[in-house]
Length: 332
Image 1: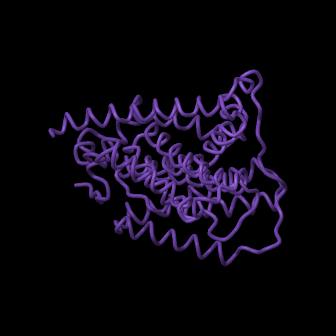
Image 2: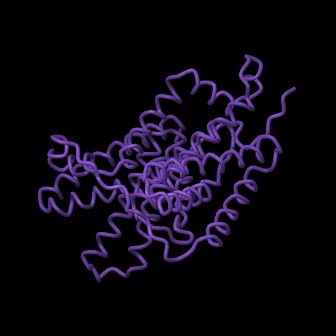
């Protein structure tokens, strides 16, 4: 089958999938409104760290720098945000501390990958290992936080059936993640900054010839990516859980990478992929909560990954990364 025809088939299949899921949700809501609302609200919560991690990767990789250090950036952001909450009792300062820690991790990755021209995968691996060991070494049990971020109910909108409790009764970082999806999409595809970012990720030499500072653009984008990954870590300790555990990111940074690729390096596509993975996780949790014992728990645990593979293979197809990704740039 020609590529154009195959692409058209995949696009139609994707729209049919979306329509089918939407119809299933409304039918389910009519039968069991409380369960359906809880399932969708859990989907939003489960997808929040994934979309933030994916946005982090998009900033880095759209500018030409591979970032597999999202896991380490998230973990360090979670740890530092937790400590800031413990010792200051100020949740706003704790969130800022998590973001700042992510920025420092992004700066370290940029320095190793762009200035020292290290292999970018090795650089990311080093940061992941460093984050895991540092947080494990300095973490002390018995530390208690001063609470966590709580849901902010938006009047009137939160009263809309189904949509209201799911979208308009969430804590601040969850709201911020939804806003960032739109903001980053506009920034990347509707502004001069986004055009320059994509240019240095696709053809840095051509970008350099028209006066774009490739090194500076890559540095800034990797640092911004680190900040968003730090925010994702802050979500875990300051909003979702309210405490810290060793290795608590539990591979979410790597899942976020898959979400980014799944979404073809676009914010809206990554958000859709994050929602899919979040829905599968929420469904898994709901099965366990309802005590459905006829399905072995191992298969229930596999559900998010199986669903992701099926949709990726059957509906998304091949994804093309930025052309200059992973290639060090030397100014001539």
